[in-house]
Length: 421
Image (cartoon, rainbow, N blue to C red; front, side):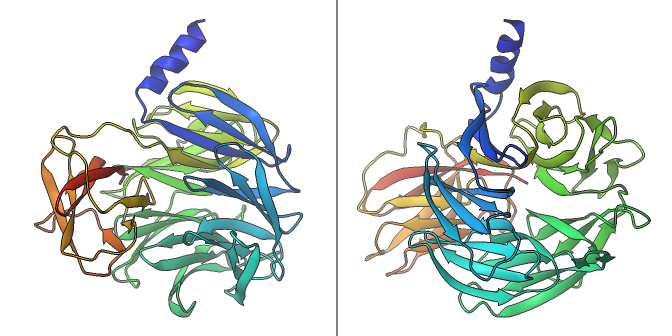
């Protein structure tokens, strides 16, 4: 009874969200509702050696490494819609959403990036990207791929590869530390976990300036960092730990100061594999060997433990939109915002509009007090607009929730977005 009350109390402090968990050994997908505390360890049966998961409002995408397939799952009914064979992709590792119909998948053994039309089940294209690609992301109309540089038993330097999503042309590449496995976008930076060789080459966090790719800095955290997640000024790092305890590191995004590293880690369940910062400053970490997902405070205090199936690894989160809106922003308009993606965001958010704009219009951003933060003009014929989390004076806005409305003959508030940094 006390535990149930504690879960509900802690959950009430969070923005409503669902955490999806890939159970690698059990070959299943689990979920946790952060608001209600409800969870299910084995909700969907996955394929052989499931390795990564991505989420949209309607669907979940899982790469099954052993079957060389992409599994498409309805997010609401949790039923499998189709399983697509990834021809030309060997050892698919990670997946990211490209647009309304496509995802991108890395092949760590084939050294490839594959573009999949999940609506039709057709492989659009596959091309070589480098040695041992793992993490992949889509941001600011660019595709980012991390090549680990690992061709076992050889451990080499990783590379960040940047592609144009229209032509798939390589636009730039950045050299990184050994075994670059995971990336997190923070404003105009990308933070990369370089795991090292699990021996005499320790792990580090590389930070790349996306406005000047030659501007790179490193944090020597040591250990084996494998995943990074950021909320406001704090970055949390899942760093394995395969003995008696798992390890989480932490550093300041602003000052680059290491708060917890290999010398003084935050201890958690054995095998910290993936991590997700939450909206109240706490974090969720999947503990592979302990078959749990733990929610811990920023300082590392254990708040809640959720029992998963065997081998929880990759996790992702869907932030549920809230319905409330400022009273002065009401219906109705000939326009409609179909979606904001990604939401929450920590760099740039894209707004997809219904149809095309046929007259002068503006997209306006408001804070929770109803104050206008930014105004983005829309050209005739435009059906997508981007916002980089800066106000009208060019200053970066504070982390938090914002309302989006379209200004035409009337107004309609269609979306609430969450900015994390």
